[in-house]
Image (cartoon, rainbow over all chains, first blue to last red):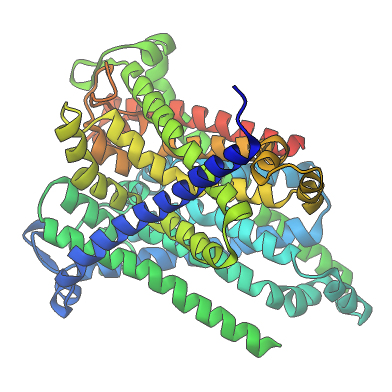
Length: 278
Length: 281
């Protein structure tokens, strides 16, 4: 039986629209459930108190601090390496064996499961380098995990800078270094910042790699060598061990809100920078 | 002096650029050093095809976990891939521009939701649904497949969207001029032309599914046995590591690293084939 093209067009259109609506419905179902049940739990007390009774009561202040510190460590370490790699790939070389190998490694790193990063971080940072379960071990592990994201987004951002910028720079007698830092880099910055935002989101929401490297201690961290329990890990433990559905929802809602905020704030900063630069 | 500085900066950038490569090498070396001894001790065949995992008795066979990983990943692909491809067609061909501007950030948001949140939501809503209407414990391969199908959507949608968008506009214009319907154009022309990108997207999505840990731990039930149906609980390679790494020592810990080696090899094969397919064009 041959279906009339007009009928097949109608059926296809219906199926495709339903698939899109289904995905939106699932997204809304998850987000609304977490926010509706979680937001009532969030209070000043919840944000400022240390977890008590294994997290059954009390707040999550130590987890918030741990998450922030770990994310800062990861981003500060990964960003220069990521941008430097992107600059090398775009400005200093043509396609060669080396660039192909670098790209292959970055893409492979991007595909490695987080639990494998966790295993590596545990054996290398925690055990071999004797950093123990700590914010530093967790942050370094996360730095490796976000490196490919920063490389890829920075490379794309630098590639979209018109060649004219470089030509003008060189024609004015600027060195390569000056051209890169004074003209190429500023106009690529919004794209680079987007990569950093993505990475921050990943650090905040990662569980498997962090639980094996930063541990799950509930104490308020006192230094980068303290173990910590990030918010995502705290949420996982609360939910999996059925300690407190209420606090689990509260932590999850806070995680989602944080991910929203990171996006919004950084986008605003980026837009401001762009309008100032012009 | 200027020339010297330029050369120096190039050297420094090369060193920085080698970071990704050296980190990948370091990961490979450390995982293998720690996992290989137990594989050679047990024997590679017994390790990969062994049916019994009982660390307390020194039995390390990961075949049930391999079956678990493959079945949840296949399940996620069957449920997720058609939906994801429909969504990418929706974005590039059917969506009015206003809807597109809502849909795209929504997909990015879906990608940003922590995996544990998906697992939590699955335990609260999907697992009881399966238990009440289909039977079994609810914690099952089906529950894992549904959650993973949702989680791999953003990966597959965004990469297929890019490859559909990359097609020249003349394809569409020519097809319309010949009197083809929009769907005929998509089915006979656009999808085949974007095939390599879409296949790469699916492979990367599968890699994401097979590597996911925390969400799967929460909904899969984690029993170490070969599942008989999709309503049975199972354990995957990743969850095996995630569950036992917290307390494993000695040989047991090495066996978990060895599980990591198997996972690492599977993922590297998937990655390399996705990269090969996209390069070939």
